[in-house]
Image (tube, rainbow, N blue to C red; front, side, top):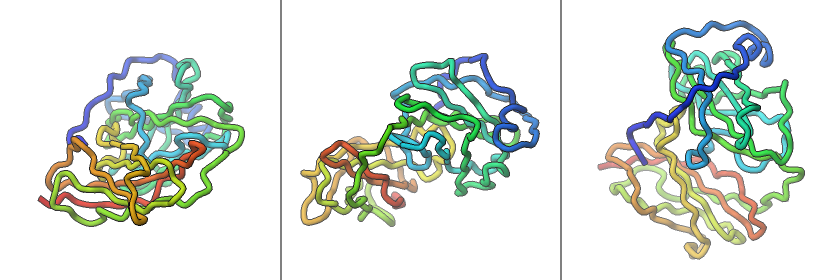
Amino acid sequence: MKQAKHSLNIPFFSILLSATLSLAACGGGSSSSTGAINSSHPKFFRSKISESPRYEPSGEITETVPTFSWSATEDATEYRFGHESTNDESDWQVYTLTSEQLGCYSGGDTCAFTPTDFSFPKFTEKAWWVQANVNGDWQEWSRPNVFTIVETDAGYNGDIPQPVWPTESVDTLTPEFSWSDVGDAMNYKIGYENTEDEMTNGDSWESHEVDASNCEAGVCSFIPANTDFFPGESVVWWVKAQNSNGSWSNWSEAAVFTINQ
């Protein structure tokens, strides 16, 4: 996990919807932007994909008009939300939205937006990003978040695993993560990031797949190798399970711990 954030290499892309059209699409109002506006098109890199539960939707979904949500950025007054097919930049669409329109006013709130003017095609992999305006300056785009709309959801019908430890503070930079064994899972995935990584480009997000053989007596455990935690850091983490059909559960509830060194 990295304490420092790194800028994405964002090339210019000339095709954007106007801010007026964007606001009309989401229910009205006009907005003026100030500061050094970075309205360029974020380039899609598969290696940069984020799975953080702070950003939804991701993975396979069934809704053709999904609601998009992300964690608010402290002091942000407006956001840009943009989406495109992962293999076709020509269908890029972007919306400029105020914090009031999104219902998020401070860090810790959840911003939510449903682009009702657009129905996403099935079986097309879509990428989406968000960008915050803080004190008149547009921040870097988030990492891309990716989803595919499927015809039906074969689904994961089992229990969702839940974090067991760590949930408070630890005295090591290499903590052992443990969570409940749901029994019929073949694999698990844990994901974690710095608690302050709300609307940055997501460089602190890390995830690891763990075989169910790491479970015993109802508890699974795993120590990630080469973690980049640092003393005093606060970390939030989640876990999810995969069944024998290859379907993943939703992410668990979040657990938070602090590196107490």
